Image (cartoon, rainbow, N blue to C red; front, side):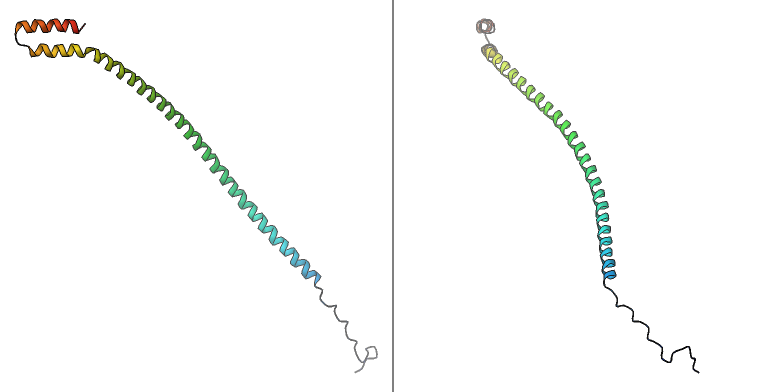
Length: 134
């Protein structure tokens, strides 16, 4: 069965060209860039979240610092008031001690008055009290 239109031997189809490495390299490079972009975007979103948390913590710390400053001002005022009170008390103590020193002779005369039992000694003690206690 031979057909005159068909050659006896069929020609071999042309060899396909050898596979080029350029498209593979292009796709590999695109994949690497896609992974790098994904990593960058992921890290950027994480950093934004961390930044927001840090800003919130900073705001809280500033609020606490302002509260601490106001409490410190109150404590410093109380300290100054206490020191003023201590100074006034010390001045009053010195004044009362000086006043008490002026009354020591009078107190001594009073003790001598209590020690005497006879009338003449009592009159002498009363005279001392009048002299010493003026």
